[in-house]
Image 1 (cartoon, rainbow, N blue to C red):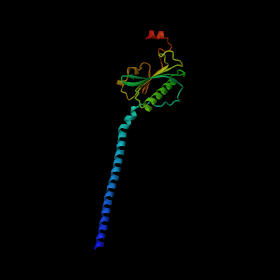
Image 2 (image 1 turned 90 degrees about the vertical axis):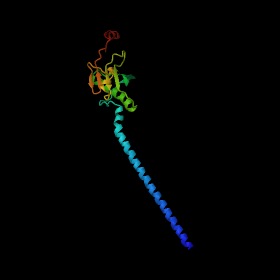
Image 3 (image 1 turned 90 degrees about the horizontal axis):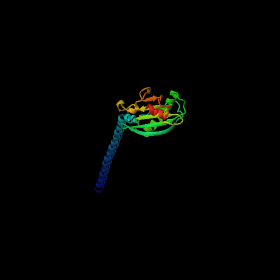
Image 4 (image 1 turned 180 degrees about the vertical axis):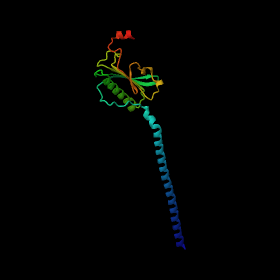
Length: 198
């Protein structure tokens, strides 16, 4: 009789261990399932937020497209950050020895615009909305006597928000988001003549 009870106790303990193991196993399976459901849910949220906010983040830094022509020789003289109507802008002065043909000067202007916007808006994640570029001869004797100039305005900026200084008008040539001017009426005039003209 004693042996029978002993065996029964052993059998009961084995059943207890089996039940505890089953509970642990079920609990582990539920945790694994919850884990994978969480992973799938978070991945879905990441994809959804990328679709919703991704284009907005990309458009934040409007970047001028890379010119197709090889980069010409020019030298940056000054880069000044400016604020106009709460908009962040740049004024860039550069010089080049390139001949004064419109196409050649436009390539210089395009490369300067590209390099400035690539640096500030794409790499530094800044928000430059307007860029003024002035190109001079080898020597800059008078700042008003530029050979060519260009103004880039962020195409995402409504025209009503454009600064007045970003509207050349007259004989300017507009190509996309850029206005070019290759006819400076003050070019070649002395300072005295410029003052009389103004």
